[in-house]
Every structure is written in structure tokens, then in C-alpha cells.
Amino acid sequence: MSIFDRFVSKETGEQERKSFHPTPYRKMFSVLDTAGKEVKAQYPDDSKTVDDFVWALKEACRDRYKKALEGEPQPMKAEARFFLSKDRMSAYACLLPPENEGDGITLEEFLDDIHFEGINYGILQEEIQREFELGYLHIFLVARGKLPQAGEDGKVTEFFQRRRNMRLEVQDGSQVDFGEDVQLQPIRKGTVICLIRPPKPGTDGMDVAGQRLPSPPAVNAYVPQGKNTAIGRGGLALIASVDGILYIENDQFCIHAQKIIDGDLDHFQGTLQISGNLYIAGNVDGGVEIEASGEIVINGKVGQARVTSMGGTIRVQQGIYGTEGKTFIKAACQVQSPVVEQAEIDAGTSVIAEAILNSVIRCGGTVHVMSGRGIIADSLIRAGDSILCLRIGNLAGGRSQISVGYPPHIPELWERTKAELSQVQSTIEMLWNSITDLRKKGSRMSDGERSVLEQLVEQRDLYVEKRESLTTERRALNKELDKRCKGRIRCEKLYPFLEVQFGRLKEEVTTIEENCKIHVEENRILLK
View 1 (cartoon, helix red, strand yellow):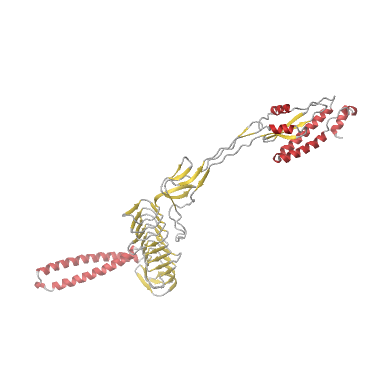
View 2 (cartoon, rainbow, N blue to C red; view 1 turned 90 degrees about the vertical axis):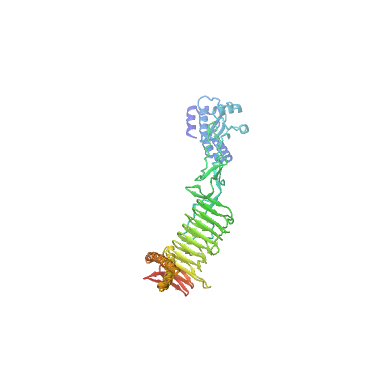
């Protein structure tokens, strides 16, 4: 016997206690436990709520049992008990049986109880009627709230790669992988860069007490709008505002404005002059002339053409295959091409190639021919710094001329002034001989001969002045060429014949050499 039973026995007496038969709460506990297991199996997500409800029901049963044993037996009406989950999204009910021949509870009374308990949303009308008929100590769900439904955040679908470079970039400072596509993304005005999906709002929820549960707000997508781009198509797209090169900067799509030619360029009359950068998707041929103030990217080949970049780099993706005397490439900065053949190249800084054949190259810096075949053959190259390659010459035994270590124009001027000075000196000597022969005639000289003599003397004086000017220019050039040369020529294999020039020093290599590091030391040209 429990302490509670003993207490009731002492107060009412054993005889009085046996005069009625309240439902033993221990038996109720067993029934409630079974009911709890059944409803948890049906609604496993509400297991904690059901356990708490069972505990509360057991407490209520104890109270009812205690009242049934106290004093004069009084009828105790059946009672509906309710329980809300902590989040107020579900409400459960259980009917406690009447005691001492008390009245039962009707469905209408039960529904009124639900209303007075403040449960007024998500009431399961059909389920309640069915569950109610199962009788007392049966736990069942009477109302279920509606969770808020989250909307969809905005979304941006990008159609282009996030490339960071907006202009040509030299890989590793000296080499370019011509096997890869040009890492530039040309784009036309009006092209869609991204599609923008606006956010879709969610739907609010409501708990069983009728309290609105707001849906979390949907978030607008971040639109990566940068320079020269615009929102179009009714706010559903990011589009290009200009022709140019698409790149990413600060997590935004931007466009570097420039002219774009979609296909080949080979029938243009006159000179195509572009302010800014120029991208040509195809080949350049047919003797066309192109001039741009910025970078020039040619995604195809170059044949007979004159291409000039006044302030940038020229990149020819598929090679320069020119015609002698008809193909000229000039760039303020760098020239990049996998093959340079039968062309004249003038680069302000450097030249990067995989093969240079039968060409004339002038550059202010270094000529890099270190990838692919890495060959230089039958070419004239003047580099302000150095020449780095894998091979010079070939088995056919052509001839190359290479000058390094000085600005290209200085050795050329030195050679030209040398030739001009020699020619001027020869002309002066010829004039002196003619003047001397006429003067020997003395008084026998005719008027016509005197006139010729005056002309010869005048011509001689002019040529003497020219000789003095050339001599002064040559001294200045000698002074420049006498400066210490830091240039070098490095190659793994060298075939004859090669004429090497460092300033005023020249040497012809007529033997096959390997691992050459041609440089000047103590006023001598060394091959190793």
C-alpha cells in the first residue's frame, strides 16, 4: 500500500473506503503508458511532447483518485485534458473517465473545451470524431499547426568564366603556352552575362493557438555588376554595355572596352585604325594594314599584313607565316607568336616564340625561344638585352646574324654609318682625282672645264662636310658600343653559320657547339 493509500485509510476508515470503487490510478498509468507508446509510434517526431503529456495525465489521475477517496463520495464527471507542444505546433487530448458514477463527456462538450483552451487553428475535425469514439485514456492528436514555408532566395546563373585578366599577360615573364586558348573573353554589346532569378516569397505558418509564424524573408541574389555592364530584360539579366573583353574584378564582371572583329580580316582597304584594344577572332592576310593604340589579339594566323600596336602587346595565337618584304609586326611592348616565319618584327620590350625562321627581329629586351622547338634559323636578330633559345641553326646550314646587349638601332646605325662613311670617302677620293686632273691643265683649261671644276670642288666640300658629320656620329656610336655589355646568347645546340656581334666585337661561329653561353669577357667573345 502506498503512503497516499494509507493516508486515505486513516482518514476515511476501511469500511467507508470499500463503499465505492474508484478506478485505481496504477491501472490508469499502465493504460496511459500503452496509449503513449501507440501515439509515439504514429507521430515519432512528437515523442517528447507525448511523454510530457503522459506525465501530466498521470499527475491528473493521482489528483482525481485522491479526490475520489476524500470525504463523502461525490460523482466526478469525465474530463478532457489537453497538452500543447513547446513550439505550439501540435495539440494532444485525452479523456479521463468519470468517477463515482459521474457523467460522461459528449463530443460537443469536447469541442467546446478545445475552443475554451484557445486551440483554434489546424483542428482535425474528422480525426477527432473517430478518435473520440475510442473512449477514455486514449491519447490522440486534435490540432496541428502549419510551419512557415521558406521562399526561394534569388539566384544568378553565370554564362562566362571568371577570368581575372583583362589584357595580355606574360606567363612566368618569359614563356607563353601557345597550346592553350587566349585567356581573354571577347564579348559583344547586349550579350547576356548572367541570368537573374528574383527571390520567391515563402508562406507564413500558424501555430494551433492561431499565432502567425512569419516565413523567413527570401534574399535577393548578389548580382556581380561591374564596369560597362547593365541590368536588362526587366531586371532578369546582366548584359554587356559595350564590345570588349570580359573579366572579373572585385567579384564583379567588368568589360574592358575594345573593338572586336568576329572573323577573318583580309579585304580591308586602307588602314584600319582603332583607338584602344583590338580582338580579331580569325586570320589577318591579304596585305591589310592594322593600327591600334592598345593591345592586339589575333586568334588566327597572320600572312601578308602590317600590324602595329602603338601602346601595347601583339599576340598572334596560331603563328605568323608571312612573305618576305610584305609582313611587318610592330608593338610598343611585346610580340607573342608560336611561329615567326618570313616576317619583320619590331618589339619595344621582348619577343616570345617557339620558332623564328627567315625573319628580321628587333626588340628592346630579350628574345625568348625556349618552348616547343625553340629554334632560330636563317634570321637577323638584334636584341637590346639577350637571346635565350634551345637551338640556333639547323642541319641545312643556313646563316643567322645576332646582335645583343645594345639597343637595336645603335648597331644598325653603326653599320650604316660605317658603310656610308666608306662610300663618302670613296666619292671624295674620286672627286679629288677629277679635280687634280683638271687643275693640271692650268691655262689650257677651257671655260667648260672651269665650270665643271667649280662644280666638282663644290661637291667635294659637301661630301667633306658629310664625312665630318658621319665621323662625329660614328664617334658617338662607338662611345655607346664601348660601354660594358651584359647581354648574352644562351642555347643548347648551335649549328654553323652564326655571326655574333656584341657592340663593335664580331665573331663568326663555323663549328657545331653545345650548351653555349656566348658572352663578352675582357673584350673577347666567349662561347662558354
